[in-house]
Length: 231
Image 1 (spheres, rainbow, N blue to C red):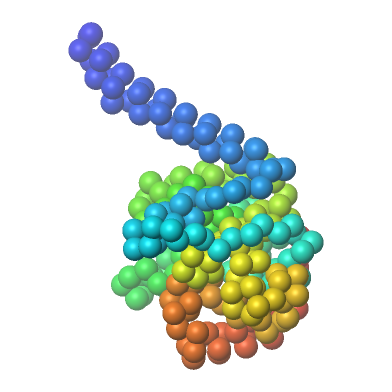
Image 2 (cartoon, rainbow, N blue to C red):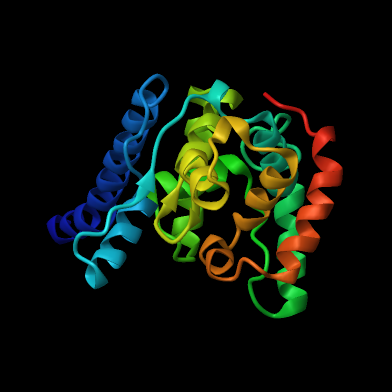
């Protein structure tokens, strides 16, 4: 019985304790960020590490701006492109996930994620781009933490300030300055639509600004974005 107890302790209780402590760590950060702005994210740190391997003095382009200094054009464009039911769901759009799963099954590879803005934020803040069932499960847990602790406006504010928009470019202000030499507050509809379409593959479009898909998809988002509801 003593041997069984030791096995139970090391195989079940210790991993369970570590998992619980990890969730407490995430929850403490989420709670702090209700009214404090993140200065960096997991994605930022990972990208900076990679870029500094080639150029040790490289610094990310990133500047935080409050919600009211981000153009409503960009907010509408991002919601239209990334998560058109953002204001209605509770963090996860199960129908979108099912549709993405079916699409991936047809293609025989992962071509669509079906992740909401809140899920993308959870991943950006704490996790990695790697795909695994454990990482997806952790993403869902953090997603519900964000939704329970924050309102939609705060979630969108943080997302727009930390999401990647190109090689070393993070957040709406840096993106607006980098691509259009203007501020996030002054982005026009066409500029906002173009930035929104870049989000799923920001490094690719950073290097391929003349992409035909980028132009065509931007025009579609531009036509639809005024129908998007803002939090």
